[in-house]
Image (cartoon, rainbow, N blue to C red; front, side, top):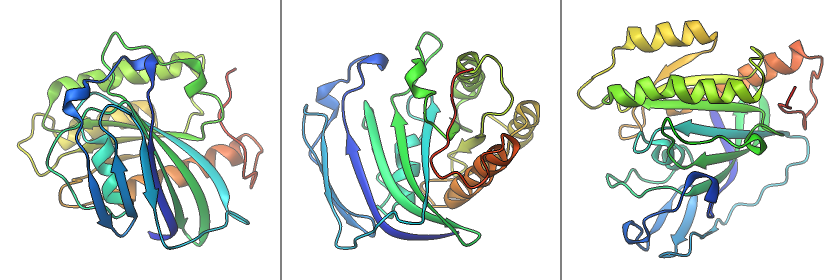
Length: 241
């Protein structure tokens, strides 16, 4: 998959998923291919810069949401995808926003990617995360059986927002294939088959199969658009039934 244009990351507080431990946040700067960013201690904000400029004219707009348990690598997958170096430390996420132009099969997509705080069985998924969203990445760690079991709970919450509709573009992702497994590839494949969605295993640490996540999701979104008659509508998206 080819990528093009500028990448950007922002962060802000998302009270719906609880508060962050401010002590776990540190100032952070990076100069990867995706540009630079700085995280403010306790402020929950990011600033970023990139010398490349991009216009979204002619590109399909896509809003994507990452869902999963804490510490499964949601943020690291996105950082690696926009060209930032892998960082082997855990900083709890409140909410990050990544922006990137993605090219799949010759089509360009202007993607806004929301990386939400880790969820557990008691977390709520507010309905506004179902409005105007084109697709979802549901991610667990192959090194954590608990995160695999919890991803089904998270999917149930998502499907509840859509009243059980099967036409919700999703990709199931098993991250951390570089670590000792607690979840087999076959278990992930079986769950994806039950959901009727693609399955990708990846390693953010080794940058293996990361691009395939976004590639598969863009394809699933286009398939859903065609099925609902939206075709090439660049600004379509999921809506509550």
